Amino acid sequence: MKEKRIDRILQMVKLNSAVGTGELAKTLDVAESTVRRDLNQLEKMGLLKKVHGGAVKLENQVIFEMSYSEREELNLKLKEQAAKKAASYINDNDTIFIGPGTTTEMVMKYIKTKNNTIITNSLSAFSKYSSLPYKLIIAPGYLRTETSAVIGTFTNNFLKKINVDIAFSGANCINDSQLMSSNEEEGTAQEIILNNAKKRYLLVDSTKFETKSFFTFYSAENLDAIITDNEISSKIKNKYKKFCKVL
Image (cartoon, rainbow, N blue to C red; front, side, top):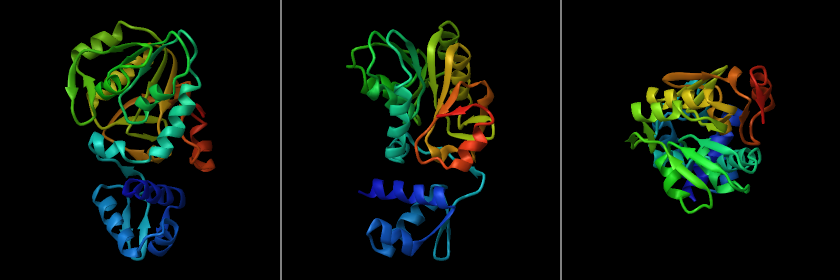
């Protein structure tokens, strides 16, 4: 219940830029004291700024990386919307790359096609969906436990040698045309496989737009499309359509 409440608070702040404690309490059907505790937690996580009477969106917010378990619980509805949409672009017999991330890995849950080969450098995705009726390959390398991503020299050398029909990459942030990661090695691995893909998609929920992170690894201008959820504002969608399609 708390996770859903946190998701809803983040959505409201993202969509409205500012929201009052009373409005949040009424919408969520909880006491204002509960909302204030949630806002305190979210401010400590660097996801919004508390002000007198409510909270505001952080402009050009710099995202500091949360743990995998923390990210897994955030914005579940938005991630599902984006993942379902992404899966609809997969065809029978496609070879697919699924990058690490709580949104990208969810694509595997919604694949309905046949005879696919799925390659990933996400240990979490490999473990969760190993029973699916697909040829599933995990890249070699060392495990970055913060994100469950497999990275490093072995990973990069492996990815340089393969070609895929579709690559779904995640990102910690996207700002203007810049796709950003909190970790250079994770970003480099995504850059390599995107360059080796016939179709290149960025898969992010709408909270990732207009934020910044440590390492820029790719340009949206080189993507086929950005796939996101249905909550993205028309203003943001129109801005990013200058660089590539936004689905």
